Image (cartoon, rainbow, N blue to C red; front, side):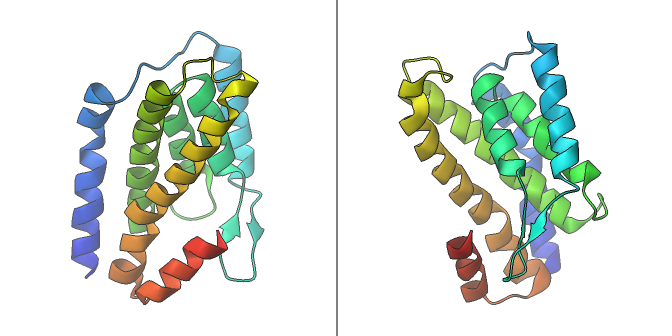
Length: 170
């Protein structure tokens, strides 16, 4: 089981390179102060999560990734998710980190592509809020489907119903 989990997430992570090149919209790096502030916030949030009664640890990582996606594009958003993984309390080199990288990578690629298709206004305008909320929920589903829904049963041996419950709780 664990080898299958590593293989699936390894392939999904390796496919991120062509995914970013071929599918993702262009990213913006013209506001280094914004990127620096987001990076600092990412480092802080990775160390200040809140444990929930169901065992999930809640932090602001997903919100920061969505903000980075809207303001700077998919590469900075993915970079924030990697930074949060590196600065988190757990070891960086673990199967869960590979699952997280694959999940967040594909979520930002697909989320950015959907936002580019769906929104004809700047993502910072109030008119973009409905599209951002829809993409936010789709990204949460993608992250769950690519990450915990595979990692939980295969690597950890959790029953699938526990992972569905985790999604509902989230």
